[in-house]
Image 1: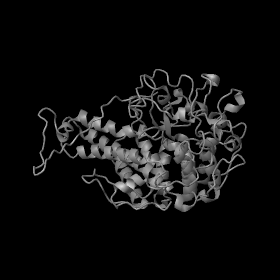
Image 2: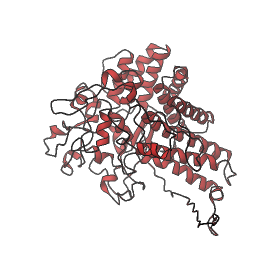
Image 3: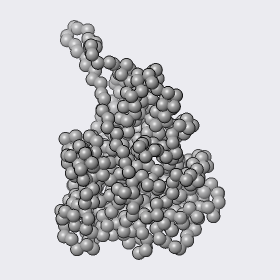
Image 4: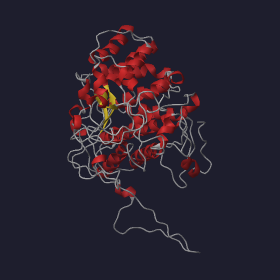
Length: 508
């Protein structure tokens, strides 16, 4: 199931008029309220709250750039090639995958999307500083909690990719420049936002069916565990573990019986789903001239095989980016239910299509373009597939809990049980011990294409030994080795230029 909010994007235009020797003129509209007046009622603050969710949808295509967050991380790991026509097609992706990005050739859309989200969350919090007609104490607490969780979520994008970023918890005024923070400082801001939001005790543990897509306590718990574990903040591990145990004990969440069903439209917001970003094809109006309009996602088009005959094997054509490596398919046991639900063996179908660069015949089945997947759209079919982005799933709760138990000296028996619950759901009957190696291996099998692997390799210290040159006889692949100075991407040069000397470039 999914719901989609219809909303207006509200903006203000400040017009300064002057001539030589004249004073600046202040122009006041005789008919339109100013921002403070407009956002003094409950419905209008709710509009601002909905607008704060809007940038969640932008990363696949916005700002003239393809930036699907989960795949940008995954191409820097070891399960995907970059693909396309050659290394000049989406060149920034190829450079990132080889740890060779430069300030002038690096993704910039995540930067814009993330800071747009932070700004909109700050809007909500600043509107709440004034009296709001019709708002109850519960409304105020809910808006504060939602805005702070969302602000942390957006900051998490920026923190992981760029590390040392400007950060502001109040919107900037002219000249719109603020101090650059270290990655460690940004982390503390994010943790405080989550701690504040959770302490308000207002968000539901699971959103109502009519509110799916809104943040919840469970989503805040998952985000907390993610950033604390990435930071290796062992002092906060017991709190993260407590949150995971609350979710395990909750009757609201559990493993979906059929792994493949999770990634179908019928599996959206299932018992396994803790947080998804909604996309919808029915009446979708997203278009190439209106990429920020409400509707679907272009991700299935990006990652599906090129010139695939319409409807063949239940799939549709795409552009051939991010093909899976053959080694990804081969890492699964033959009886692992996740293999075919994750890896579509397009080559084995016998269907002829245009094999592009780095194509070994395997594609990410979780998000490929399925026949009927953009049904009912009203604009550009390529942009309007209905695949929700699965951000957090219950299986990650179990694997987080197993890892946190291991790190804190908790019950080895519980850790083993949590790990093997995930394996049993996949059809694997052999029990394995809860070691860090086994947990990270299971996370890889479980979350291919979900944007977890790269960050797991960094936080566990495996990146420098796993992410090494792997170019093959075809000339495909990575020629550089990951190293600690590659943890953060270069800050886009355009942002350095706009910052008037207040931004220091990352040592990439």
